[in-house]
Image 1 (cartoon, helix red, strand yellow):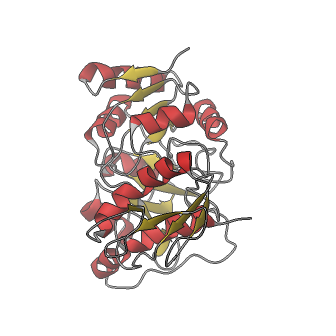
Image 2 (image 1 turned 90 degrees about the vertical axis):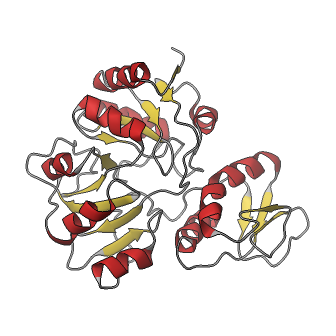
Length: 312
């Protein structure tokens, strides 16, 4: 059956809810990137999602909720986790917390862990879909595991073709990088994945530095694989200029064949990163990228580039 193209109307949202309720897969927009949504309580649907993405089953998924009340049924939002969620939700923050005893999110989605990753996305379409379903959805990026995340419905279709049931068109995702993931399940808050909410903002809010995950620890959230977000082309990072056969990506005052941000704005670079990598990957075998500042959103940009450039 051909993948349905749904409009962002009440009728389109109702159709997406019906498909999810029947165990289907729907690509949905969030403020970060497009995700493949499945009913988080339906283990068969989640298993199909893993298969479509070719995602390792030990890599847990984020349960997307429509607010703190639904989140509290899935995980323990006491203490600092609830403090942060209450201030930064809806938005690009995922909290990893101990799972609640009555959680509906299936064990497969949680990769058998006793913790759960929770996020309240700010995109109105996905919020309305979750509300219509009445329970959380899982919605990892709508691409093959390890590949470049999609920020438009066209990206989703090019990546996944007709392997999913529907795509609801919410336009281009404004943030362009996945959510920041912080674990509150240990002795101190730990940054598992930098993302759309900057580390320094969270550290100022919490009044303490965020810890780093232990080397070799099993993934407690998405985005912790060594190679991820990767084009087929070979990436060379922190390049001063291009070498033979390369296309050169600049930033700010560093001119290139293309630029992540002509004016050196990290917010723009974050939004442009995946679309530019996807575009260049169609045309080039080698991509060189100039140094990107590591402060603010630059931490997340450099994290994605480092994982994209990783070779086993």
